[in-house]
Structure formats: structure tokens, C-alpha cells
Length: 256
Length: 113
Image (cartoon, rainbow over all chains, first blue to last red):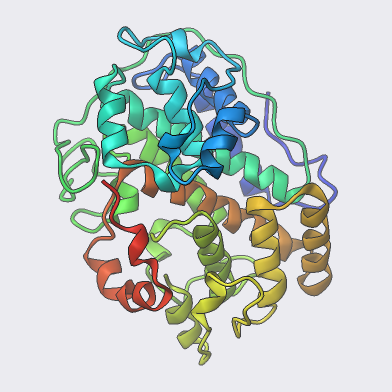
């Protein structure tokens, strides 16, 4: 399928459909650590999380640890690739639901426990990238009042299992590519030694950063323009863009 | 984080409290309809989102509403990346945004272990 906003009640810039279509094609293909079927299952689970009773109770609880039970599940994600997964609360399934519904209360302790239960950090980062792109595109559709796009049919094939040689543990919870990425296969991700942490965050799986850059360039600004307070795009002034950005971040309890 | 700096480029002084207080006047042109739209995108019901969308279109036009939808949905993604990977602010944002973080009392959101 090709993503289109031709049926929207308003004209929608063509670069939105083009960028969303590129992500949809990537979603349908084998990734770096997950198969295509698993990637689509992650996306399906991300949508189901919004209606999950456990997530709703957790969100309302003083601490996310205070609500127990099982997630409502819409896919076979939990059964895939998790050799040491708990039968009650599989780590990948739980991660998807928490990132969608209660991300501001994730913690390093939670991630360490999740990884100890059998989800590799490489798979976790690709899962994050898949979930956040899906959430963003679904949110765009909701904002416009148009239906969410049907998820794609997964393609056959094997994940590439590519891990950047320069990835290392720094201050983030997950390993990242060194900021000085000159001369590496990741040199396209940011100008050498000049990157924001939010760009490096998913660089353990470089294709997730490429998707992030692609989507952000269309939704917000090209990365090279972000730190220039005079840069803007479309009909909004930069203060108007930043007011929206700040309000969305605050409503999500994110300090970043 | 760049609200104050971008406002200064236009000889304005946006009130950053509008970011954390619903209905607080930002000093940004059409700020009220933009924040109402952002709030409806993040957590509003369909009816309130439709109303916020209509008010934004009436005030700024359809193209601005689509652009605003793009920005709001972009930050639905960015906040989750930051929250799920535990990244620090980094030197640039520490220097640039520490006053705003302190002013808005956001320090409490930073230490999660």
C-alpha cells in the first residue's frame, strides 16, 4: 500500500505522505534485529496498548509497580524471540505498552530488569524506534481527524543483525555510537562531534536514527536547523512551533 | 526549550509558563489556540480535538493546522525516545535550558534510576 492523505478533508503537504510511506515500507521489511512480522507485531501492539486495562491502571497508580496483571495482547509478539521470557509479563510486550502509555516513568532499573529477562538491548532500541515512529504517525492522523493507516503486510527475509563497531556505553541507558562518527559507516547520522543526545539515543540501531531524521525533517525541522532559533517552516513561526513542542513535552512529563 | 530564544529573535518575550500551565498566556501570536490544539492532540477526546482543530483553522488557516499537527506529533515521538533511552540533556541544552528547567520546576523529572 502507499500512504496517502488524499482522502483528508484538508490539503496535506505531500512530504508528510512521502515520509510516512517510507516508514511504512521500512516497517514491512526485515529490520536490524527483528523480522518484518515481528516489527509489524510491535506496531500492532503499540496501537493495542492505548486500550490496555493494565496500562490504564498503571498510569493511574502512584507508582507503575503498584498495578499488577497482564497486558491486553493483540499480537503474538510475546511469543517471538524471547527465549527467557516470563509467561506472565513478557519483556518486549511490556516495553511496547509502557513506552506508549507511561514513558515518563520508565527507569534505568526497569530497563535493566527488562534486559535481564531476555530482551537484548539491540532489540530494545529497534523496538523503541518502531514504537515511536508508529505513535507519531498515528498521532498525526488523529490530529488531522483522519483514520490511522492499516498496518502493512510483512515481507519475508532475515534481519541484518548489524551492530555499529563504535557503539559503547556512555551516559544513556543504552549503548550509543561515539559522537565523533567520522570515517565510520554511521558518518551520515550527524556531523562529526556535533550531535544532540536525542539523535544519538537510538544509534545502536542506525536505521532508527535515519527514520527519526526523515520524520523529524518533515514534521519539525531539518536537524541542521534545530539549534537556529530563527529557523521555521510552513505557516508557523518558530515561537509557535516551540510553544506546541513545549506543551506536548510537558503534557508527557518530559523535561527534554 | 527554544521558545524563549526563538521569541527573542522576534523581539518578543514568550512566557514559558504557558508550557506547563493550561490557559496561561504565552505572548505568542495565536498561542491560545495552538496550546489548546496541542493539549487535545495529546489527551483530548475526539469532540474536544475536533473543536480545537476548528478553532485553529479559523484563527490561522488549514495549512497552519496541518503544520501544527506535524509538530505536535513529532514531539509525541521525541519525548518517548528521551524517556525510553535515558539520555542526558547534554552540554548544549544544559547551558541553554537550565534556567527554563529551573524556572518551571522540571528538575524533578530528570533523576530516574
